[in-house]
Length: 85
Image 1: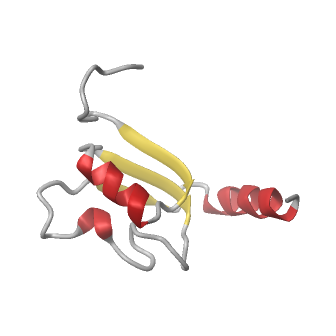
Image 2 (image 1 turned 120 degrees about the vertical axis):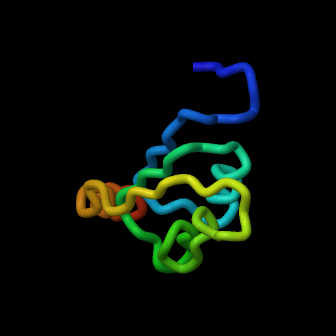
């Protein structure tokens, strides 16, 4: 639904793969309250794996992070998707 403003306060971002640096930064700038993801991304993850952009104490907004939700299922979806390409 359209909020009519750039802040996404009260919103939760739910994704299968841990956000990259650009996506994590966008979530912080948009003031997303919570980031929920399934599979960790050891190569480019920026919500706890490789970097932790969303919980950096130097930032004025730090969303709550919930990681590992249905991690096996999410990893399987990603593996199947990239195998088919």
